[in-house]
Length: 81
Image (cartoon, rainbow, N blue to C red; front, side, top):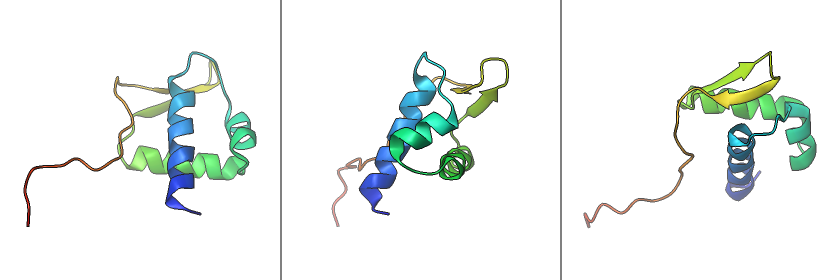
């Protein structure tokens, strides 16, 4: 899998978690054309990396327990070698 595909998957999962609608892992998997197991693997990896993700059995959806945003990029520091 390419880096850009993995980033798109992460961005979409982040979008789904932040959205008001309830979306299940199976729906994410179908939209992204990956397995449901892969969705759970991405969610587990996101949690490992510090994303504050939780699951509500009441609403059947994932949510963030803290405010924040997904960021991945290159931030210039002004230091040159």
